[in-house]
Length: 311
Ligand SMILES: [Fe+2]
Ligand SMILES: [Fe+2]
View (cartoon, rainbow, N blue to C red):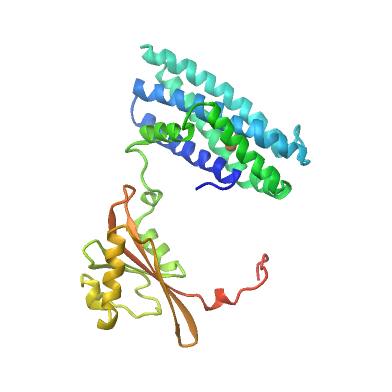
């Protein structure tokens, strides 16, 4: 699933940022539960610090330094300084956390305060790595070094025990359980609708019972005209009878988990139209319905070279 060192390290970042977000939410709402504090101490000491930061310090940073990125100043120096600072804050968090677990409830506010500072530092640090240091690394390192970093990361994980990655993914899931809403929850209905209507792809959605529940771009020009009359209709009634068997086959395959995509392309009025179908599933893998995307890909097909400047 992961091919490159950037994939591996950025997956660590993503997971840790979710843990931070969930804990921030939990602890700003009510006093920390001792059990969660215990899990947080374990996660950040054993994974964020002793595993993730060590992957960088042992396997990435030395190679970046050897490739000419200076260690004392510039992004690498800043990253190392931040690792040090995060270690200090983590030590404070662990010390307060142990006292809190032992029953010293008066330290609760300090514990949360230190955690918020630690979390903010990590999030900012990960952003800099994802957006600045790693892209820089991808430029200066060759394929052999890339492969050696991946091997180093895997060996380090193996040295910490069998299935290290899975064990901390599990711990992260336990900490974040029920606390992480999809990011779209922060958007108003108006904004969400406007985003869907701004996509250069037309969407329509039929639910798990095959009834049409949504289409985008209602008041915009569309490749395939659709009007509100189709809402609630069975999708089989919206397709020409000669293609209904194909619609049924696709839906049956999606429901049975046998297929993750079905695509078609047609020529229409001098344009190449790409039509794709995807099963929509919830995080537990349950089938929620089928998404159809329709896109004019004529201009995309004609792209050559690169365009890196604004018109
Ligand atoms: Fe780092
Ligand atoms: Fe990192």
